[in-house]
Image (cartoon, rainbow, N blue to C red; front, side, top):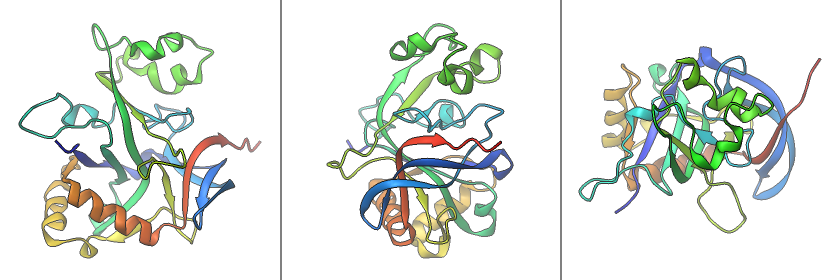
Length: 231
């Protein structure tokens, strides 16, 4: 059974533009890169969190996407794609992307949905851990419910599927008009945009989006993302 894919909308007021150093694919070549990326505000929970070796996604709309294995229906699993897009731009008829998240695996929270997945237990309630302070601690504050954490697949030079931050030649987030999509997909997105609900995608629809991203993307930020401190 094919994995299920989603478009997930984020409001722009919750996004922050920061300067980073990272590895990126530029014109097909992997190189050290410095530039601006778009992330969740650092004063709150960063979700997806891209400063870990594998990016993590745990909260925003995560409970609204199909995770439980089902022999009759697709669900989010290995090789699912999650496209994080601007909730403001969709109202103008465009998909604008800040994160393309390819799922490597799904890890489950425990107990009262406040106990983080076991593979990250060394970060649990560890205030020295940025992963705890900036991502995992929020359910313990009653701000979010933690059910599953999605772990990204990063670029390894072999697999064609991997996570990336898509940047245009103008050094902006990549965007394109809904009119460039097949009618069925365009109409599906339009139906979901008013409530900003996650949009489930078939394998073919996921490929439609990836093809357009490849057309408009000049830089793919892929790993080793480090914030440049600007005093």
